[in-house]
Structures are given as structure tokens and as C-alpha cells.
Length: 313
Image (cartoon, rainbow, N blue to C red; front, side, top):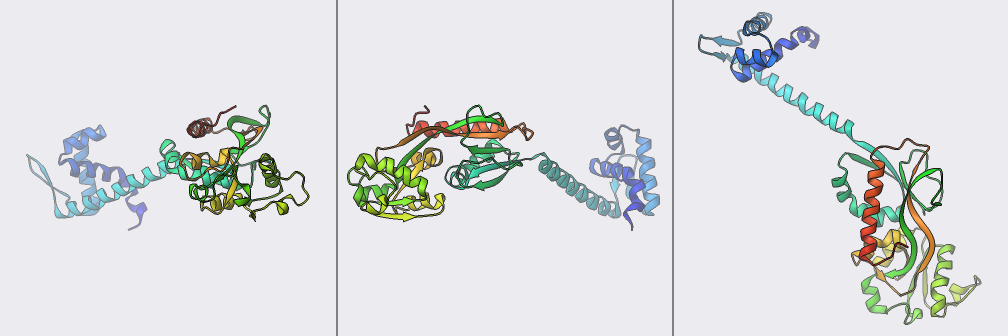
């Protein structure tokens, strides 16, 4: 039977469902704000169209016939499935998709371990992660929130200061227990290096310990082992696995430090005076939930920095 053949009787089917569910034409009439005789006429019309009796009528009550019971069961199950599907579609449509442009190391070390907590705080937000290397460069045009190093008055962005750029040597607790701190004997250590920028930071940190100035082969002259990686996430993972000492940007490693997965390998640190900020491009419409998400991220970072006793200035 084609669906269009029963379409004219759709309202009558709903009236039938109400009468069958409540066991009363009068109760069904109240649900649809019509009279009891109107319900009786609709049921009679449905029975005539189906050529089958749906109710047994007595002065005291109405009772479904076996055919009426079969029709009611199918109709009830269908309406429940429709209600469930409509609810699912509405909930899905109500979700807000937010695109984040974060460094792969920040996403891996800081955000992903907190996704469950984030979802509890923002259950109607779906995240799309656009992973980049480092925190410089303009985010793509479809990004809602990014982590970048920008000037505090950059007119292109809404800006939420996130964490000061502080760089420190870090390692696993097991590595520190085995090799001792960097300050005591740097020559005992394995250094996990990324690129030339990291070399310059290592030079600044190692000079107080007797490191060598200049670019000309200072790593080669330095006693100890230097392992070089092309991805910062791998550098930090190697440090957590006890393979050596890595440079840790506090905005990336604050969670790991707070949970004791990483520890300071020495007392030295570099404060560049720059800030890692959360930014939302002004060229893109600001979704209403974006400020709340940024405030939440800032609050979590603030708690991290307080736990590891890092000043915000």
C-alpha cells in the first residue's frame, strides 16, 4: 500500500492511537480538543476505510479487537521510533562545531587528556582539531580558536592571554633519579633536541653550567649525547619515557609537570617575555560559545601554573 494512500487519514490514525492508548473516546477527544462524537466519527471512518472493526463498543467501555490491537502495536512502535529519530536529529543539529588550530604537541600533551572534562563542560560542542607545528603564523580562515604568539594589541584577533613563554629543561622522574640534575653534571646527560632554535635555547641554559658560546659546533664539543627529532611531540614523549632531557615550553608541559609525568631537570629557565595566547580571528563571525571556551581553557591553565608554582608575570 502506498504511503500516500493513508496520508489523508494521518490525523485519524493519531486519534485512533490516543483512543487505543487511553481506552476511551472521551479521553482521546480531550487530547485533541474535539468532542467525543467527533472521535467516534473519525474511528468509524478509519474502520470503513480499512474494512475491519478496530474497537468493540459497549455502553461501559471500548476494547480493541485483535485487528485493532495489531494496528495499534505497529502504530505505537512507529511513533516511538519517529520520536526517537526526531530527538536525535534535533540534538545533532543543536551541536556547535568549533575548529581549533593548536600545535600538535599542545593538543597531545595538554588538551587531549582533558577532552572528557571539556565535553562535560561543553556537551553541545563538537571539536575539529587543525594541528600545526609551533605557535607562529596566521591561522587558517575557518578556525574559531587558535593558540599563537601575537602582540597583545593585534587588531586582527580577539585575544585571551593564555600562558607566559617559559622554557625549562625537563625529564622523567626515573631519568632524574638515575642521572641526577642537569646543574650537577651536564656531561652525564642525553639531550633531546629538535632544531636550531632549540640549540640556541640549550646554549642559553647550558652556559651557566659551563656550556659553549657560538654556533660553531658547540653541540659537537659538548660532552654527552644529543638525539635529534623532527617533531616536538616525539621529543616530549621521549623525555617522558626516560630517554633524556628535553626543552619544555610551560604552556605545553604544565599538565605533565602538575601530574609528575615530567619534572624539572635543572633550576635554569628562559623567560622570553612573550605570551602564548588564545586568539579568535575577527574576520570570522565569533560563535557565541567561543568566549566561554577560551575562558575555560584560561582557567584550567591558570590552575596548572598555580600547581607547579609558575608566576604569570
